[in-house]
Length: 152
Image 1 (cartoon, rainbow, N blue to C red):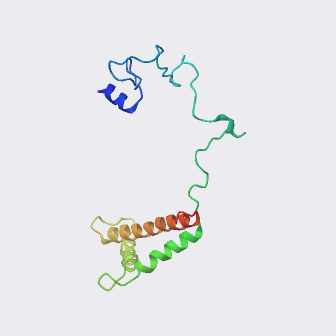
Image 2: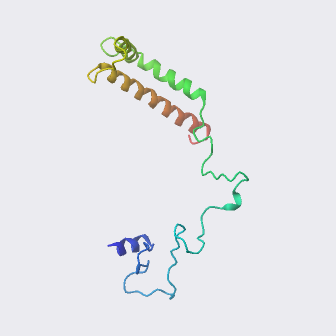
Image 3: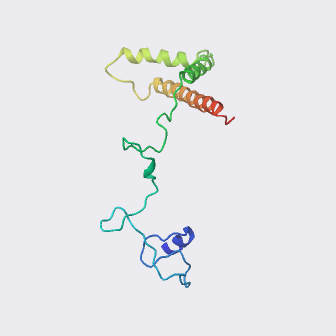
């Protein structure tokens, strides 16, 4: 089975006797495939895909930009207000999601060193409110940065 997987991938899986050639066919050259492992001692120096010519003097190699999140206070402000406005609409029995969440905090703090019980409605309002907030922030970051980078 491993031979079939190795043939489909076009790679010898490192097992003795497995090559990328189909069964019954002889390899064009008599030389074997050199599967050097840089973690084993005594093997020849393995070539790496890392270009060492581009290494800076501080010997740090990064595969991504340091500011990969590219935080922007504009996105955070618009994302928060973009969630706060719709979650404040009186839609749940004449109350808003924000109001229900903030109102559920007080009774839980009244018996404070004891935390909220699992049957407390606080958990429902907290999870729902925060899922909406983080969705708005994530989609706002994607939309704002995608627009500024020219994706759409």
